[in-house]
Length: 96
Image (cartoon, rainbow, N blue to C red):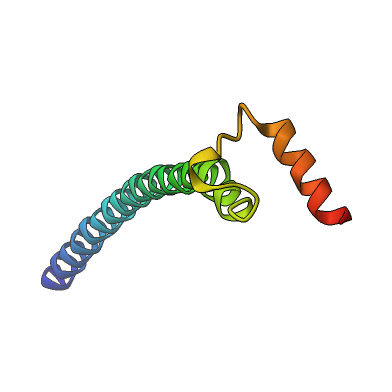
């Protein structure tokens, strides 16, 4: 009887320590998931910022050059200085 009680106590201690290990594992997994979510958030933010900046670059420089290439000689495209002239040329091109 004493042996069975000792075995029962040992099994309880083993299961308790196993339970503690499981709790520690759960806590560690929660921390790892939190760290991973921060990493993913930062990576997503950086990628979205780069895509946004690249889109602005394309809209500001390349798209007008491609769209207005037939209105001017390549050396004369200066959109900020000649914006009114370009709009006038587009209207004249459309209405002829």
